[in-house]
Each structure stands twice: as C-alpha cells, then as structure tokens.
Image 1 (cartoon, rainbow, N blue to C red):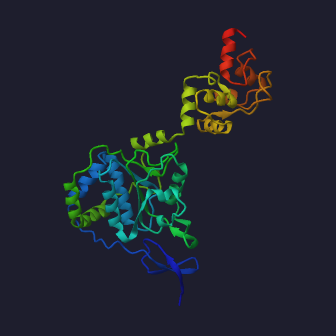
Image 2 (cartoon, rainbow, N blue to C red):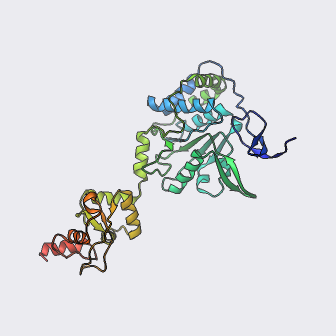
Image 3 (cartoon, rainbow, N blue to C red):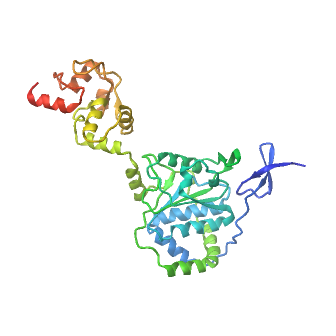
Amino acid sequence: MAKVIDTAYAPGEDDLVFPRDSDWYLNTWKPSGLLPVQGPWPLISQLVDRLMPVAEQRDHFLDVLAFVSRFPGKKVNHALVLTGVPGCGKTTLAEIASRLVGIHNSSTVDGHVLGGRWVNMLLDCAVLIIEEVAHGDRFDVSDKLKTLITQQHQQVESKGRNFYWGRTPNLVFVLSNDRRPLALGEGARREWMPDFVTDKPLDEAFFVALNGALNAELPGFAASLLERDISRFNPAAPPPMTSAKAEAIQDSRPVLDVQLEEMIGSFATPFDRDVVITRDVVHELRCAGMPATENQIRKALRRLDCRACINQAAPSPQWHGSPRVWAVRNAARWVDATKTELRDHICGSDRSVRSPAGSDLHQQLLRKGG
C-alpha cells in the first residue's frame, strides 16, 4: 500500500491521495461546493458594472472568472489589479470570486506581505486576494508578484519550517486605494488594471442588499460563467492594455529616466550634441540639485534606448584619458564613429574646448569665441 509522505495543494485533482513523481500526497484542495443553477444575479451585475463601466474591461474580467471556474487546475498568468476609492466595492467583488471557487480555497493577506520575507501565506490557494497594496516604488515587489503569477510552484520558507514547494494561486487579486499600487516597467505584461473608480463610495444600503442576496445570486452567476463563451480567452497571454495601466507605467518610471528624457528632448546641455560623456551629465544634474553617479546614468541611458559608442573619444587637453561616450541621437551615425570624430563632435567641430567639469563652461567659452 502506498505511503503518503506529505500534504499538497492540487486544485482540480479529484483524488484525495495522488502521486507526484515517485511519492504520494494527501490533497488539501476541495471542490467549491457551489452548485450552479440558472437564475438572475442583478446586484452582482450592478457591482461589476460599477467597477468596470468600460464594456471591454468588463468582458475581460468575466472571461477570467469563467476560466477559473471552469478549469480549477489551471492558472491565469496575470493579476487583476483593482484600484478605486475606499468603499467602491473592489473588495466585495474579489470576495465574490473567492466564493465561486470556495472560501476554503481562497486566502486574503495584507499588502505588506509582498514586501516581506515570509511569503508562504501567498501559496496553496486557488484565489489569492492581496489588500491595501502600496508598493508603487518597489520593482522588487513587482518581480516577486510576477513569480507568483507565472510559476506553477514556488519554493518558500516559513517560520519553523525549512524551504518547501507550494502551489501558486490560479488567480491573484491586487486591491488598492492608490492609482499606482505597483511599480510597473515599460514591458509589464502580467498585470491588468481596469480604470480607477473615482466616484463616491457605494451607499451602505446597496451593500446590505447585495450581502443579503449573494447566497441567492451566486448559483445563477456561476451558471452564467460556465455557459460563457471564452474560446478567445488565452490565460497565458498578456492582458489587454488599459489607460489606467498606461498611466501607472508612466508614473512608475524612475525619476532619473524622466529627467534625462526631458533633457534629451529639449536639447538641454549637455544633450545639445548627439553624443555625451557621462561625467558631463553628472555635472549638469548636480547643478540642478539632482545628484547621480555615472553608473546610474549609464543604466538610465540604456533604458532610454541610447547606445554606448564602440570607441572611446580621442584624448583632449580638456579632459583626462579617453572617456566613454553615449549616442543619444542618430545612433547609426555615431555608435561606430572613430575616436577623433567623437572628440570633435563633443568639443564642437574644431573647438577643443569641452570642459571636464561640464558643458556649462563649454557654452561660456563658445560665447567668448574661445
């Protein structure tokens, strides 16, 4: 007779005891217990319409719930990030989703857990609800969430227990009162954000009516999800872009990137040339009260799609050694330019007057005809 060595959370696995690799495990997942029956669900519909007035966003949300309800063993590879004023109903909507899969298959945690060491409470559930998320300046938290969303299992540790493998959720809700609860880079592909709800909170009478009607409406809502056509829904694909997410991505950009992009776009010194020396950029930023290291500037220029030139600039009496330069415009022209071409361009045609202290002095010398 097979010996069970441990418990494991395996949603969609009907057997209480199941094999994995060469071992046997006791399954802690249980079916939702909700029996779908055709019927009306007007108050749930009102709540969904309230939070997602845009039809395309509403359809995507219902497709996600339909997929999770229909395939309990499969994951949706993006999080649902619901943002809005307190009392708008986002928490209630997430809790409705948890009841669809069964409260015993759901977990609700505070947002600070994402930024901490002990993340075991994020695992071994079908629906995970993360409340009060406010990590808009921490890309490391976004990376941690990405792992939770994309990987089937994750190795974690907990107090008093060695590292072990846990099952990641099939669906993750991120709830916040902030417009930008997460730091999202330009290539963010694993978060879906419907438009921010800015109206006043729903009145108490609606919540009282909804809570009183949930038990009666949930079977009909579940039945409608099972009948919903989701043939075009791909749980592994990036979710549709929304204006809310685009704004969050823009707001998440590092301050240094935004500053350099503005300087490049306005041809501000030292970006009045196609190529620049990083130490000149360091000087200009320091004068503007925004200190940054050369390494930070190099990384920012790379994120802005600037190119490091293959050659260094030829030595000049105005600086020590042969500095490394970056092409901020016309990269095809400058990325493999000769050392002399780079030096002459930075110094201004035939003028070898570029100052190692920065381009302010360079401009002063040009005005004097030096």
